[in-house]
Image (cartoon, rainbow, N blue to C red; front, side, top):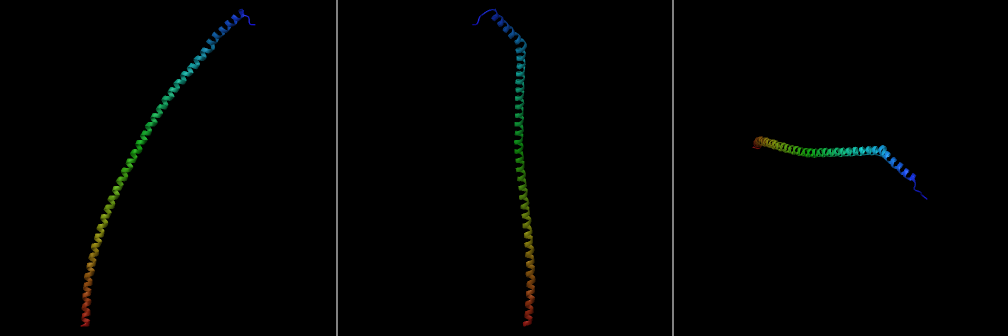
Length: 137
């Protein structure tokens, strides 16, 4: 069986001294290094989160600018199309007026030619009828 003698207390004392020495030499420095690393990781994580927030903010601003630019370009495109349609309508209207005027001038000229031809034909008919009268009479 187990006997309690002085060696048990001596071993306990040695273990206790070993724990104090290990605590001073190993555990505290390692604990400090681990603590420093955890602090550095927390700072880096906070910095990364701040950078991510900044990037997201800038991305949102860029997207807003792109949306506004698209809207502005669509308005500009619509305005240009409207102006061009108005210009085309005006040109078509002007060309229609020119065609009407030219048609009326052509019709007037044709009427004059018809009147001239009728007059000439009337003279020729009169001459022809006079010739026929002379031949039959």
